[in-house]
Image 1 (cartoon, rainbow, N blue to C red):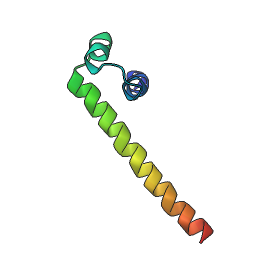
Image 2 (tube, rainbow, N blue to C red; image 1 turned 180 degrees about the vertical axis):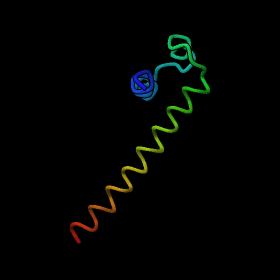
Image 3 (tube, rainbow, N blue to C red; image 1 turned 60 degrees about the horizontal axis):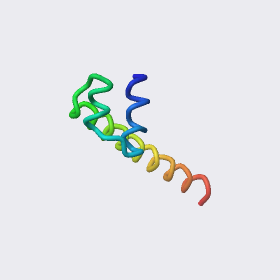
Length: 58
């Protein structure tokens, strides 16, 4: 889990996928999956919070 938490922000900041893959010893496909899962989770969280805010303040 720790590698994921460190890798995803580095990818988001623009680090090279292949270089990070070699450094961490995981495939580029795995890193891409981590990034996509992170983004999907972040988007779902924002949607959830948006609905909560709308209920709270309408």
